Image 1 (spheres, chains in turn cyan, blue):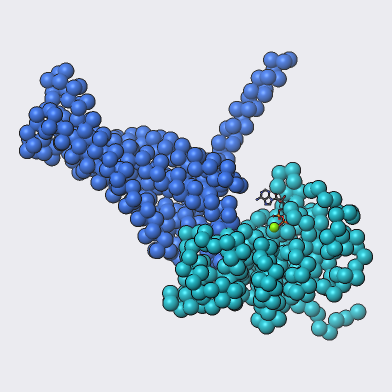
Image 2 (cartoon, rainbow over the protein chains, first blue to last red):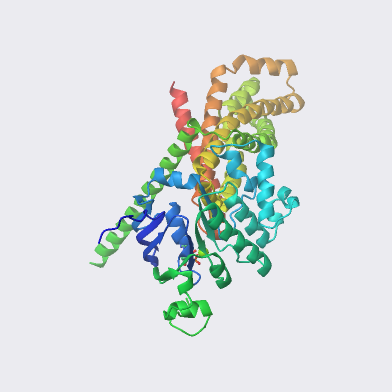
Amino acid sequence: MTDANPPAPSRIALKGVRKSFGPKHVLRGVDLDVAKGESMVIIGGSGTGKSVTLKCVLGIIEPDAGEILINGARATARNREALLSRFGMLFQGGALFDSMLVWENVAFRMRHGAHRRPRAEAREIAIEKLRRVGLTPETADLFPAELSGGMQKRVGLARAIATDPEIIFFDEPTTGLDPIMAGVINELIRELVTEIGATAMTITHDMTSVRAIADRVAMIHEGEIRWQGAVGELDATEDPYVSQFIHGRAEGPIAAIR
Amino acid sequence: MIVLTSVAAFLAAIGATALGLCRATGALTLFALSGASHIFRPPWYPAEFARQFLRIGYFSLPVVGMTALFTGGALALQIYSGGARFNAESVVPSIVAIGMVRELGPVLGGLMVAGRVSASVAAELGTMRVTEQIDALTTLSTNPMKYLVAPRLLAATIAMPILAFVGDVIGIMGGFLVGVTRLNFAPSAYIRNTEQYLTGDDIVSGLIKAAAFGFIIALMGCYQGYNSGRGAQGVGAATTNAVVSASILILAANYILTEALFSS
Ligand SMILES: Nc1ncnc2c1ncn2[C@@H]1O[C@H](COP(=O)(O)OP(=O)(O)O)[C@@H](O)[C@H]1O
Ligand SMILES: [Mg+2]
């Protein structure tokens, strides 16, 4: 069989990625492909290694074994740098710089990166991004510690999208938000993918989010990708693990004590 | 047999400790080289440097000044009572000056600044590590070694000699105040005696020491904070380790530098 139009290599691919912390085997061979312009959502119980998976892609955590490919090439310091230059990430805990004002956080890349912008312009863009995540301009001149958890999360999101990245990682973007704000954020993430054509990897427990954001869904369980498929297949799947997870049942193959 | 195994266990414990020490020394050396090399390679972050310089240098002035003032005064009393035993009370001004400038200014100033700055740098970077702010820098295409570590190393290395110089002046003044008010020295004679015996070499050797101490202070704060363990406990341990290791390294480096500057 010949393919007249071979598919482009995945934007990001993980092959057999393993990572242990001491005796704790967190990732036991994760295989995952994310195509360019695709929105991949990773679901799974808490503590199953979802955040660790994202950090392995970024090189923040060095995997014990396995490969990470960026555009089909093995990840090196150089191509990671290129990846990160058009990149945005929302950390699970926000990871805002607490010594800086909110707008300085959002504008960090514009004030420190290779393509520096004047202060006034950077501030303007920051305020516009804050508005997109539902924050008023008054929040711009506060310190992160003066905001509620949900507001900090949205500032983190504004920082992640501040320079219109091509690749975005969101670690639990709607956790700690009220349902309306969660809806706003879901819509925003979907927009980034559909309109700007960004490649997104999102971690979430929130099934509403999954349905709103995802093109494809992968479920991680016991250090491996237990199931993956298009979001439309999610409800039809007979995989007992997936069905227990998406319906939130206490009984099933996934033990409640972990 | 039992003796043999316990001896083996004892040796193994020593070996493990020695290996651990080697590993830690190696890691620290690599960290220091990497941090120092970023001082010379762009991009630079001058605003960050200025902030650190202010924090490490300017805000340490009261601590260093007070330390020097009281030490200079005490030194004058001690040298007077020692000198009186062989009718050499007149050496007070020169010995106070030499003692302050060559030894006590940089060492005591360094130890005081170590307590202040190593601790706060370790706590700051440790918190940034624990709350993933250091990881966030990486995702924003900013090398944390360049943005966080290099400016602190440079700021402390430059600030410490300036602080030590200020401390020298205040320490000599402390000796002067005690000498004039308590020991019946004529003010002009005290100053003349100080000027006569204090050389440029004394001052320079003290300032070289201070620069080295400044580097050690920032290095230990950055290293411990950067490699902080998880949680509040990790940050607490990093802070303690930073102060203790900086203080011990300052005292060790002081001896080595004194040997080196003494023999030349
Ligand atoms: N730096 C680390 N050191 C030790 N253990 C870690 C570290 N990072 C994560 N872990 C452990 O790995 C497991 C997975 O963590 P994580 O990926 O954050 O889970 P989640 O799927 O909820 O995002 C957890 O049990 C956590 O304790
Ligand atoms: Mg997580």
